[in-house]
Image (tube, rainbow, N blue to C red; front, top):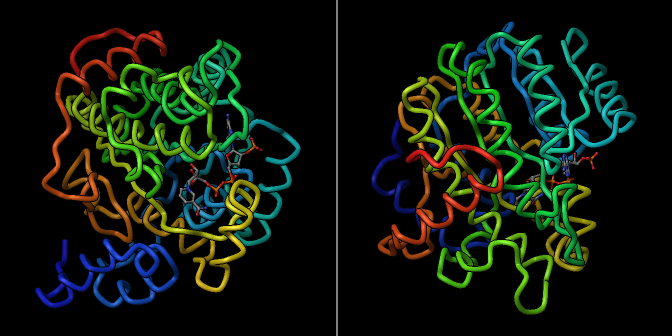
Length: 330
Ligand SMILES: NC(=O)c1ccc[n+]([C@@H]2O[C@H](COP(=O)([O-])OP(=O)(O)OC[C@H]3O[C@@H](n4cnc5c(N)ncnc54)[C@H](OP(=O)(O)O)[C@@H]3O)[C@@H](O)[C@H]2O)c1
């Protein structure tokens, strides 16, 4: 991977810590001067890529650019008509795209099992599984299996879907699992309070807090899956997109989205690193890292902070139990 000069590298690191600069459209505007090259134009021709949460926002923007690179793109969401509309728009943008809108509520473990069974029959080799679906409910609610909704959507469902699609991932060369987390995870360290109450039953529920906690857990999930899937030749990375103009951010945080509208990235720019990690050969040189703007970042705001391995193990065991997968070491 190409590296910026020491001066540009230092500037890049400063942008990472000065959140409004690094997360806004200023981040990629500067960093594109030194970040690694775009993937080859036909990098994904004929390769199957599955994007959850692809009916709008960052998922749809990523799916569109993945189709431009030649991928067969599976668009996943909860509503077939929204997916069909998204697929129609994508085909207008990329006329020869092979795009397949498919319903699967990733928070519902029965739906995930049924979807994975169908997919394994139809897709023998999966180049990339992209966990992008995201929610920030105002009130505490639960999935079909009674799991707190942000935990089910961001962590438990993605873990089960990954586990079930392992044979297809293992059958592809250079395959990847990518997890769209959020910079909001920096506000939710992995501590005993989180590990003891993964389902947010204690205290007053705040959607933004539930979101940040489960976005933190997604980073841990990426690290654990990286170890678990290494023997299959599958790499796993998580990332954050900065702040991007989507319906999701406008609905979940309307005041914030309005205040920073002039410097929000567009959805395509927010999805850039996801597309790059899916298509660039360099992304398979490492595994288990956390990225933004095509560069690995620290997973804690203070890079020297370390997470307690006992808590990490406890969380992994609990999440694996909820997903109904074996507790074998990650
Ligand atoms: N935009 C930002 O600035 C920003 C910043 C940090 C992180 N992110 C992350 O980026 C991802 C995409 O965000 P966005 O802003 O594009 O959000 P968005 O506009 O709200 O889109 C979310 C997508 O997820 C789908 N979805 C929600 N729950 C689902 C479920 N249970 N199963 C399947 N699909 C589901 C939605 O489709 P249906 O409703 O049709 O099912 C929709 O396509 C999220 O994970 C978010 O946390 C975004």
